[in-house]
Length: 402
Length: 212
Image (tube, rainbow over all chains, first blue to last red; front, side):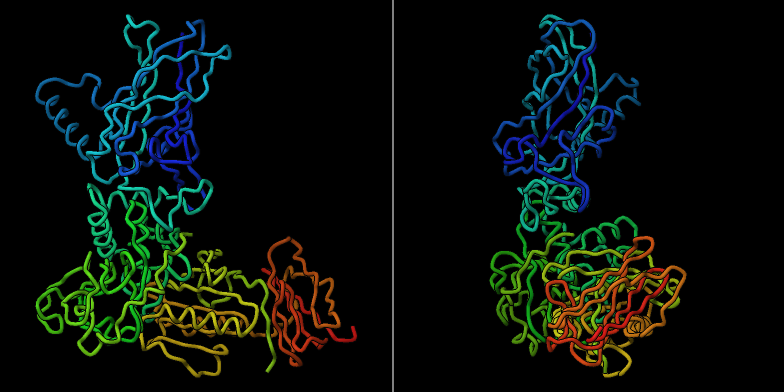
């Protein structure tokens, strides 16, 4: 008898994400097809992606759905399970080399290894056609609650046996790219099947690495904000030539172009402004389960010297002296009492932000603050500019990703 | 000055002298509507050109102001040069030019090592406003232009290879705008209109007159 694994579905219930994977797509134009793993089509882990929201699945039993087929004469019922292929490695070289390999495996497993545990054994009865429907299997040893945000690989060794007294027989090995998110992604991201605003793996690939091992929303937002700022000057820099115009966030977020830029392509070019940075940071953080807005402060305010993204020179934003407006990733009501994450510039973090010497500080989880409070507003603006620099919560938005 | 209305503007790759079109695509600009986004390679530099198409010159002016709300520098100011747009703004040094022409908004920017883009903006504006001679290797065909008593203009234009064609309408007797997808004259009565169809390999021109 021969048993074959036909398909594995992670997101088998797209009305919820409490016991299975989230609804995701690859990018603006390409879906992720469910079942995510299909025989003959899925080779690498990237071919079979799935994302889980830690907070949503916490305490719940996770299930996947599996389709099997058999060829040749066989009993109509068998038992099937899948083991963690990395926890039960095939015998490797012995001696010192074997120990080093084992140690490396442990390290890799801790950082990027399987968070989904194993597939618990259950009996499967084949119909006359020889191919089952998508049968539900329970996952055991799931570690999602003990790992941080990130992108991991699950490799399963599929086995069957005919009778409980028989030895298990390997019949397939599969590998899957698993995105671990802190919570269900928030707007602009949605969980509506077919929507282009369903989380993109093109975005998850970056966001999960930027926020790797983060265990809280604030930590994830901080890591994403730092990663975006650190894209300068090699990938992007502040748009001094064009007067600080939006290149990626005019109307909607041209995420397709930005991802292309991240991947070494042209994108929409190298320049960004504050709206671009706020949009990138909040959108990439929100896909991990953060809940940030893009919101403005207005209008026409004089600046302290700062370090714009991609610049190594302390100056008042290209030497302009002031901003017409500024936009940041902002939490809650986007008022002066709410914290901001600014991926566009570093302010002076010392006791006197109005004069040199300067101590670079990326504003992450920093309350906007009242005038004189020594918080974000005071660090961004000169004393004369502060009264003109006011939160404009009516402008808060979550730009569509296109 | 003549009134102008552009319908279905697109790039064919020869609009910016000395630059090669790398990519052009429409994106959903949300409240701004569809945005034709293009990237051009000029020497070692990159020039980004976005085009928004409104229903009227007033629409374009409003959209331009909306675009300028996303510009942080106080030094991007209105420029009064006669050869650029109905309304134009530019960054010092010419790294960003923002202008409205007829029902279009054009955003021309240095996207990397392109330095000034003023010349590219001017060339683009000239291309939009020009009254070209018909001709070319494979021009579009204007088979019909009708005008209703209410000043609605209807036409049939095809490309021999079924490629996209954009259209410019010009008149000196009325204001032009688009209503429910159709060009209309204000006041709502017939007037003499020049219809220019611009294809990838040629241009066709037709005249529509009130008594035709």
